[in-house]
Length: 479
Ligand code: FRU
Image 1 (cartoon, rainbow, N blue to C red):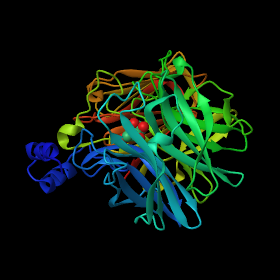
Image 2: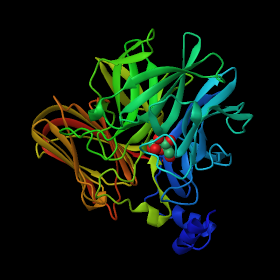
Image 3: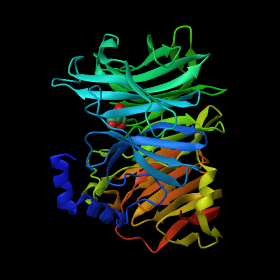
Image 4: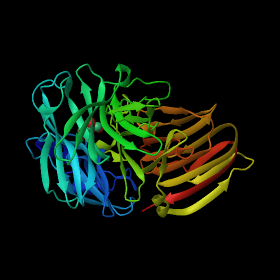
């Protein structure tokens, strides 16, 4: 533990163990989301199901809730609902990653997991405008079980990257196509465009640069982080987290945003050709650096980082003062329907439903449910006349009026205010509410809005108001 961070622990609690005890008492600790035991968490990494077990690795700074030297934390699960904490999988203990084991992915071949990550080395100097100050090596790790490391070597050293880029080249994601292995890497070019680089390999050990898979114009941001590519029978999907993207009306309003293109790949020329505009993946306040993987049943699942610390400039996350910060989203199942990426909650979460209560909205146009710390609420709307409002947590309001659905924070949003979506029609609102987070699936996965929220006390009831023919079902959720 560094001097600075042990000092930090002392001010908060005393010893690290005392702090961990104190953290456990925090009412904002989440019930059914992954979060650090103490310290800081960011991107999900190396997502994989291997011999039945799901492995979720993540960016992790165990000794400082404000971030710092990142490791890969590790959690495992048999059902994606109940997770066990595992020992740290990767620490920044090699010359090629001494300033951080940055983000990366997993690929299963011949009963072993091949991980690829960015080894970060901060040489003195300037990093954003040149290729000289900082190494971002691509590192290959092989593990036969997901817990222990059998092989760990640089596979693309910093010096081997193509010309024309700044020091920012990172976040490898590997996939297979026609018997060959491909890797996409995010980058920032010297002229400050986000670009995605493509590499190819026959054996996962030796990689050859194939060119630029996707590049944006200046409007599309100066840096692309965490690229993720997968094919579906209908469309190819290119997901990434651009920085410096311009906000439009309702979209890309956070400081950093994550989104996707649907399109088609020209494999002759190794270029991804988008068919759609770039769409924001999640329209809430806390969502970044998502990663996808295919599980052993063939589902394409996505997990995102629920938070980026500076989602809106005026926001200040209150949990570092309690010794920890950030969490991951619930896993979501992806599919493409009618030319659009749908995101749905996993059916596995139905297992933790308890105490079902169901109500039909009557003539008095209000519905009330007991407010609980954690719950799931499904609102199915048949007909709606005029606005609809929902009040929950301490002072969170969800509203729908004139085809605009809005998520409004009160003081429990700690500086954030409103995000909105324009809809053709509102058919369903499906909420997953944890002690300090809300995920809203709208119209059966057409849109999602994710946000952390920090209530000091709860309203007595969850209230729905509007002139509507609707059915609402609420479950308490508890593991
Ligand atoms: C995205 C990111 C990645 C990087 C990692 C470092 O949030 O900046 O590009 O690998 O976080 O923690």
